[in-house]
Length: 234
Image 1 (cartoon, helix red, strand yellow):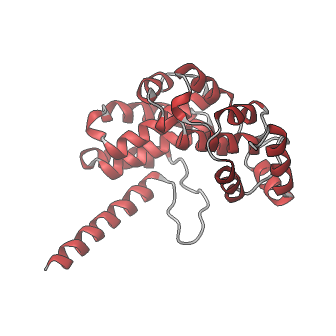
Image 2 (tube, one colour):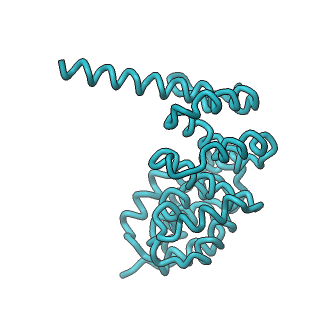
Image 3 (cartoon, helix red, strand yellow):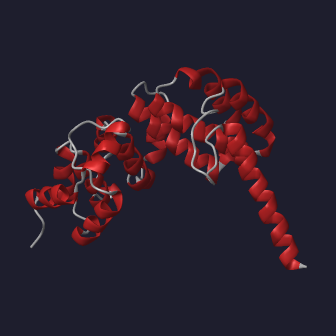
């Protein structure tokens, strides 16, 4: 028997715990949540399997955990461009936005048209999605983008951007510096001048999101990998 909305919500509620709820609240979530670990949401989604109808019902509840589960159940191709746009704009929590972008937006057949529209949008969640898609393109096909124009926008807009947007703009800045040698010096200079995430706390062994540090570390690893590869051929 297919799982109902009531069944799914009941299972999510059972899986919730206060530690995750508190962590979510610290990261900007409201009280409409159960506090389920992401791994447990993945396991539940694997049990249910793809189910667009249930996914839409879960999304409509507005509950954070239900929306995370919904993202794993909905097939991107079943969404029209307008439906996806409405979903992106209805987000209220960063983790939901990031899963939506990773699992649905990036796999939608009209993502490029949406990317271009969202890059000019004042809605912070739409703009976050647009910059996120642009970051993906920078890592895959940077030569097809006007990188100088992107750096112009980052230089003038990033300092005053909403936090939801600023984070993904920073990914683009770092991505340009990492993947585009001809723009690297300028990307590092912009990062130094803006100073955004300079003092961001990071766990031991992790790379800082401060663009100059991030760029230099990733380039260092690229060079190390290339040297190791040459050594293995000799």
